Structures are given as C-alpha cells and as structure tokens.
Amino acid sequence: TLGSEAEILTFAVAPSFQRLGIGRRLLKKLMVFLVSVECEKVFLEVAVDNKAAIILYSGENFVNVGTRPNYYQRADGSFICAPIMAWTKIKNI
Image (cartoon, rainbow, N blue to C red; front, side, top):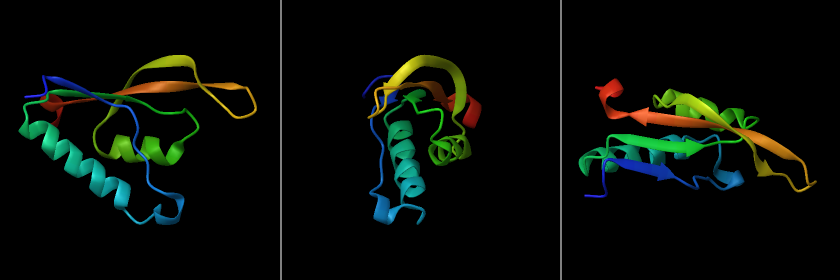
C-alpha cells in the first residue's frame, strides 16, 4: 500500500478543457484508487482565491483544516494564503 495518508501536490486541467467536468472525474478516480490502497486521509493546499478548485474539493468532501499564510507567490511578487483541505475516509462512509 501507499500508506494511510496521501497529499495532492498538483492537480490541474488545461484551461481549454476546464468547466467540462474533467477535473471532477479525475479527482473521483484518484479518490477511488486511494481508497482501494487503504488510504484514509488525503491533504492538499489550494490558493484562497481559487474558488473553482475550492468548490470542486468541497464537493468531494474535503474540508478546511487550517491555513498556510503567504503560501503561494504570485507573478507580481505578492503572496496569497492557502487553505489546507483534508478528506478523511471515516467521514465519507
């Protein structure tokens, strides 16, 4: 197995393919795989202003468990915080 916990470091859909449900389908398949290898918790960070991603993750039962201040640096040099989101198998059964 991979262990009881996993972290999603990068999850993206090319802009020309966004808003077609591809991200949701990919995330669902990833979660099915992780459950099949006995993963019980999944973590990720997402930019606080990435509303589409937050809606996607929330729709798959990820919840906000904390915040990383100034986590992402923007092209203009500014920083933005990132909610830490977690999915727990026990909550989703």
